[in-house]
Image (cartoon, rainbow, N blue to C red; front, side):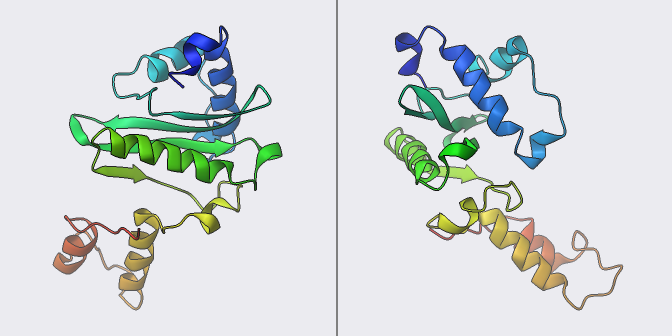
Length: 178
């Protein structure tokens, strides 16, 4: 994104349109009204944690078709996270999202980030995303293991009060499969 700023006069409008188009298809954002352009600029472009130089944009024949946003994780200079990653529906199933994820991960690694966090939803309308990644996202693994742990437990079982569940699922254990 940072390299597109000087090259494209309308980069902010294009970024805004791509972001709002992609966010409309994501469960966490689909029930909220999209931000107006000014709010978007303040909460994304000018936000202290946003990493425009690590954010990847796919451009095909001059059209902005995909995005993978990269953010710094608060004061933790070793951790970055991918926020919104997606490709416009007409351009899916071509490996564009995989390339975007790889580009942001490579940028983060080259700039000293030791951890890259990403979340994904299997119900986001893009069936390919949960099948083609070279890893199972940690949150998915954790969710599957919690469900397994709860299997057969009484209806009123509270995993937040169970020491084993707290240690395994809500403590320092990380679920990664790289």
